[in-house]
Structures are given as C-alpha cells and as structure tokens.
Length: 64
Image (cartoon, one colour):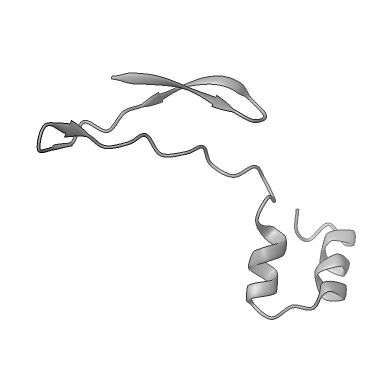
C-alpha cells in the first residue's frame, strides 16, 4: 500500500509501506532521504577533517 508523507523540499509524496507485519502491526514508514549534501559536513567532520579543510573541499566543488 501507499502512504502520503510531506517532504520538506518536494512537498507531498507517496511512499510504499512495508508489506511486512509483526503481530498484525505494519512497520512505520521510514522518513524521507536527506537532501543532496545535507549530511556532508558532519560526515567529513566524523572523518577528522577540519572546518577549513571541509570549506576548501566545498569551494573546490569536490563535495556538496
């Protein structure tokens, strides 16, 4: 089945509900995918890149 969810950038979207049920209950619909580049800064920071290094990569167009 389909379920409607609001996406912060794309508006209303139809998503597929999981067909799996446990004890007669459907699984919750997962949230929307992150926007392109939304988590880039945090991922690069987790890899140990400094703020200056992250900004340099963005300025060079190497990351979003």
